[in-house]
Amino acid sequence: MYSIIVLQAGGGGMGNFILIPAMLLVIYLFMIRPQMKKAKNEKKFQAEIKKGAKVITTSGIHGKIVDLTDDAAVIETGAGKIKFERSAISMELSKKYLSSAVTKK
Image (cartoon, rainbow, N blue to C red):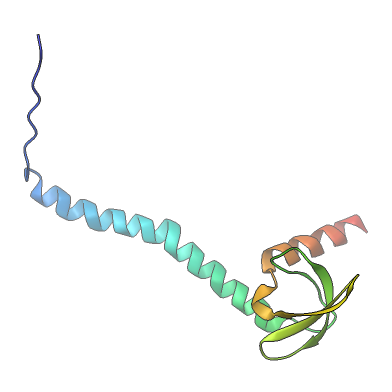
């Protein structure tokens, strides 16, 4: 009536030796590498920002850059001028905002 399944431990020595590095390679190629590339592009974008550029911060504040220092940017919004770290300016949101503003005109 009842079946008993017996699993052998240690039976696939060479298969496990190949499988684990293959899984690590897949994780690197599909998760770690794209994230590193995105972070590199984000840093490049933040370093190349110029005065007068329209941007969106990671918190969703829209504005225009009025002044820049090495690590900060003063953004003019509807409520006034606010100082942000350059890292708070979102490349992804800013590019979407600029592309949608261009297509609307």
